[in-house]
Length: 108
Image (cartoon, rainbow, N blue to C red):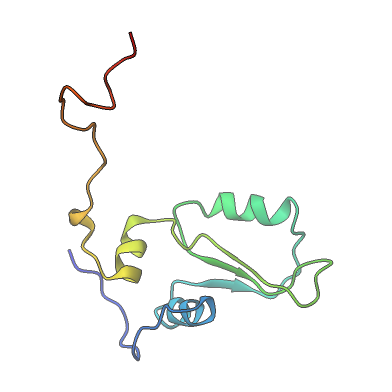
């Protein structure tokens, strides 16, 4: 099932700034200008969004010129969309095939 995304300009993920803009344009980025504590509060909020939207914290307590962005790779679908790959083309690494020189051969 194909996802329906709004029409946007050319996707540019060559920098963090351009990736944030792309995610904002397609409506996936959750951004807040509410001040957050970078030590425990950001982690707690990110944990709440596990598997969900990418987050951008615009105001970080104690760091007036910093922003925090996280949760970019929370879903396989988002990774596939960012890097233009098909989700089903991914494989889970398995054990290498068994040979006499296999790295899985136990020491004796």
